Amino acid sequence: MVPWYDPPVARMPYRSSGVSYAFGPGGMTPAVEVMINTPTVKKLIEENRLDKLPSAIETGGEDGMLNFNQALFALVKEGKVTEKEALAKATNAQALEMNFKGIFLDEGRRILS
Image (cartoon, rainbow, N blue to C red; front, side, top):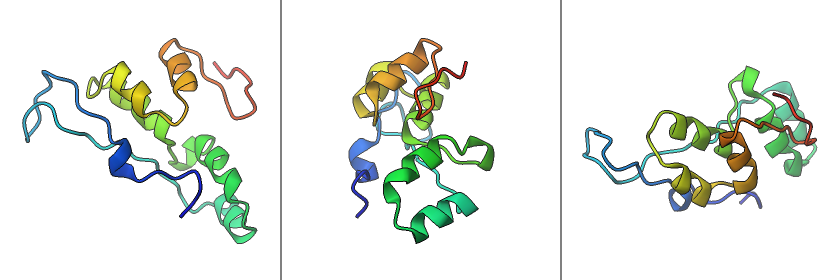
């Protein structure tokens, strides 16, 4: 098991109340982290530099990658989960709270927009 990985079901956020789904309101909705096997990811895995994978995922949006906080942010913006629930499940609640305020940082903590 990768040290920074939590089982997905344990971190799945609850849906916002009042939102209609095929299975009814409430329950859980998936927030998924997506890692694509890019040359960078492949090299990090081959060199056993697994501690660098979260940074590669976070900055790999152009390649279709998405980290857990980014997925939670999208679910909140879509109205599928509340900010409170997203913050409770976030891998980095402080960074996600900043995202809700319109502040986005990269791994090097430089302001991007």
